[in-house]
Image (tube, rainbow, N blue to C red; front, side, top):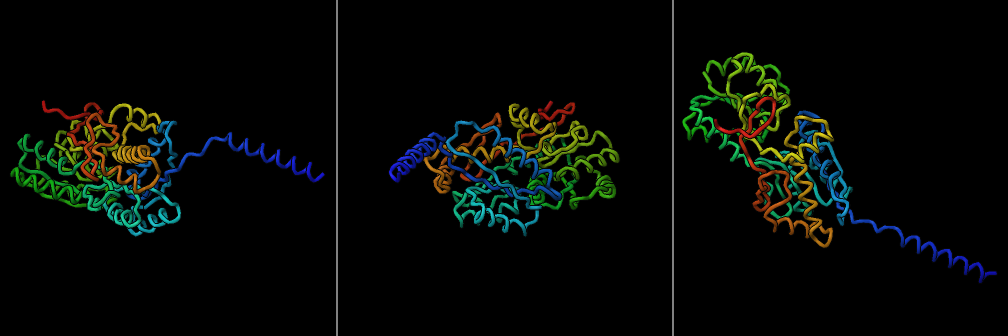
Length: 359
């Protein structure tokens, strides 16, 4: 009887092993953490980058050798939260990569990525954290954008401009670069800084009018940029020249900016725009979505082209590449850890965002 029981157990165990062997082998997992401002003043940008990342994940080929999981955390755009969240992602979530948004977050997480030997993708106009193979920055070149704006104003014969700049690290730094270029072209300027949440710019606009400005340069996000532009046109007139850094991909209401010209990242190709619109029903997309999409696909590109899921090997591969997958008609330039999205002059024509061409 004992022999019979043992034989039956052996047969059952053998059958179980065969069934187990029939199961498809689990793919190795690459875990990506994204620390984004999903609430607060910059939530519209943080959520757009989240949507871009999710769209990239959804569009992944089924034939990839790895599985890519994402952990999202809300930074509330508060610097004090970012180090804690990043440490939790590294030690608890065991992420292989962290994606951040804007200068403060990138400059906090960058050194942590180096210390912990994980990959970090940030979005910054001033990427001081890009010092080694672990840190990468995906953004337009602010110097190129500022150059485009300064040249445009000089070609128009503009001699006086007024700058409205939100109190945010990137825009303040970008405006400083732009001011130096205006000086070289003998364009006089005055400037007004304002805080997030301001809704009444009328007193500032009257000061700008008394300065006899011929053009108005806005360094801000929606909704403040939209409110300011609308009030400018109400008080000074519809035919004023409005331009700005990154403004073209950052407008929430295109009709307000009809005829305006901006220094801006290039418009991505139609396949991306169509997919984004179909998924999110959003006519106006934000630059954060394209940065998230490009960053995610660059990460996938690295891990799919190495024989392991080792973070250090992936970092070494990324650092050796001169280009990454793109959603732009122009090639994205990769200069060491800096991944530059092309900059263009854009305009709004009949409510459509297009590349500006001098007539």
